Length: 148
Image 1 (cartoon, rainbow, N blue to C red):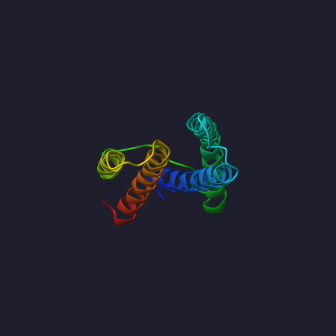
Image 2: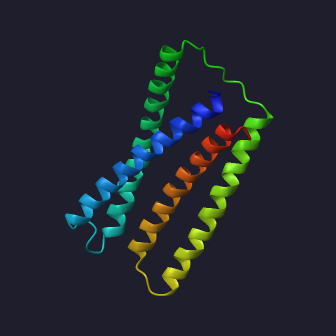
């Protein structure tokens, strides 16, 4: 498994963990009524910032655990060199993710123009960011598997 493939896999795992944490926290707060009232968006933003900070720590832990487990199971010493193929795969995956995110943001703007609430728009934007990150990592993994 190449360095880029390992990075894509650890990023995919991290993103899935963070999405689950986001959903659990935000649904719990929504059920508790934390977002009601005039300070609802501020509470939402504070929760998201807290989880963004936590996601950095989660990413570091997942990367370390994955690399230790990979080295232990395979006996291979990780080769962190990147070549033109790695850069091309990253570029292609990022391009696809940006298209998804761009069209999604356009959809959110249209939804707002049709009368959606700011709370809904922010949740859709957060979901779009998470889905585009998942999509990017899945495309990277697929391109590595395909040998692109």
